[in-house]
Image (tube, rainbow, N blue to C red; front, side):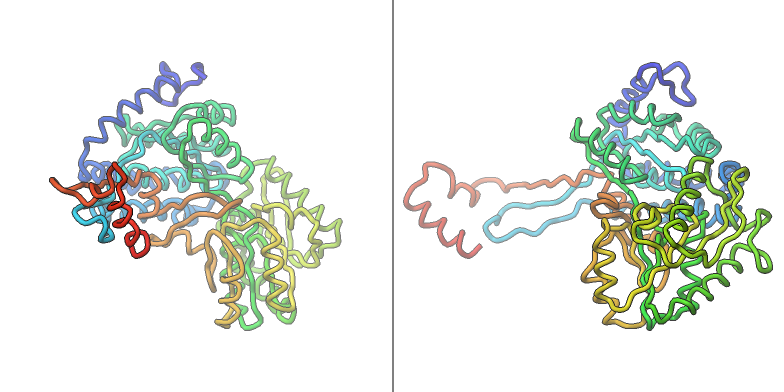
Length: 477
């Protein structure tokens, strides 16, 4: 591990840099909230001045359109910083805690202290947003950070390393590298690990964290369903699902992974969906490589995985309702809509993470609930319906990390909502106040008054009088 080098510091090993971060962490404990805000403001100024660099880096990695980079990479981070700057004074204040009468004479509060040295391991699908977004919460809570961006998006990773050198003064470092570098990092005793990625790798991270009893935030994924009731506004649902599914070429952890629609509405919905997808990402009646609104699959390995998934589904009887050019050399993967999909097909047993959308039908809500509950709990669940009864039934009888009703993916950017999964789709929450808390130790502090305290009544020796006093307290307080 000592031979692995840190970006921007070729003479220092990861272990040496980790020790530097620990020393820096001690310094930051003496900082004021104003100093944290100044650091976040400096990051904000850099981002506002370097939007073009972010666009160029992400485009170089997988041809993500410039406007889409603003929408999905830049704006969420800017919003996170502004929200933190506006609320950090309040978040950082100690919270007074009430007490029952048998604690008369005490005063209690919860203090929020930084956890210390934090590791942020980020994925390739939103390589800037999902690295720098958690960093905002980490810095707001007063921590130092080691960032491990994805090696699958090297241009964006390099830009993040440049950003860190230009903005920070030792509070943040970047380590670039592959899974072996990540494994070496996980051997270190971090105070908190924030990981975004697949459930399979999340289990590896959690096992490694257990060796040091390190707390974790795991933002994972799963098969997020979009459920469309017969009462839904179909054209509107199609428009919103088209955006949520095929944005970023479907490489989004909260993208709808499959559609469950009432059997009476399937054909009408598919007609609307095909039209909306073409309008959003194509020109005329087709979507081609020349489209300036449609990205690419990140690499050949992922492209091959998607191709195998599609071939497997068709071999098992799925029908192509909508498709087009699929070019391996340029990693252009046309949006695909499937019907008649076998539940044993890979597109129904694995997270797709690409522009393939199976559309399944149901007859009643019990069938929907059974289907959703037969799979691991997803990161997101989408309900399109105008029936309160239907919406309430799905909400109360299923479990998911997040829910969005009559829209897609917008729950991710809401500044006041916690974001995160449950069980297989993740552990812990992020964004805004909830991200601040994830990177903080909520430290309870109790202060006892001087002189006589009620607690004295229950100090040894344990007399008959004490037992008499204790009985009503146990019964009534």
